[in-house]
Length: 247
Image (cartoon, rainbow, N blue to C red):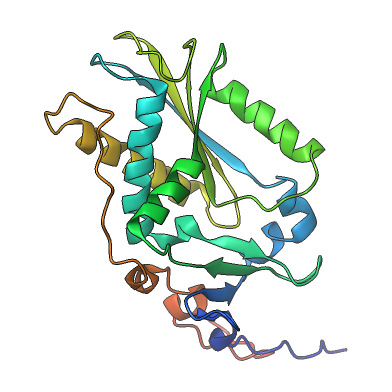
């Protein structure tokens, strides 16, 4: 008894292509692990979300949760230009089919910063990052299903208000909540490292007015060229369905 031949893997099916009716957006079809962790029902309830928490200690005066969130937002804009996957979205045609991963460039530098500001939140209460992760995970499972962005960032510290200046020596947690369709454990850690290094460089300019930031300027639209190469093209695969090769 022989098995039916497997369909040929066609790299063209999984490449970035223009979105019908949208002249600036591109999309590709999810493949492999992306396909099953991106199924509509489990993905929209956070079944495969992963969290990365980093604890930092305040070493200089003049910082608050609010200021740190602003600095993180600026660093996030710069990361988005270099790695636009952080700004992707997910759409589904049916509950059971693989999702599409879509990307739309910001229309301006101001719009890019607004997107980043909406991606970063402050939590000023007697919780740490792990407590917040547990609460978010529970809410995702109990709330109505919704699409989750590639990453949401939470600046967590014990302060009375987000704008309250933090004492030198106090601890702040930076919690990144990731949608697993866009990240694995390695890429999420690389992202967190790049983000925090970017913030450190911004704070190390010598200007002690940490709340004064410049809107990052990038030629938006050109970052589409920085999107990850589709996996079949990256692997240079040429798989014939149903063909066995003895090694």
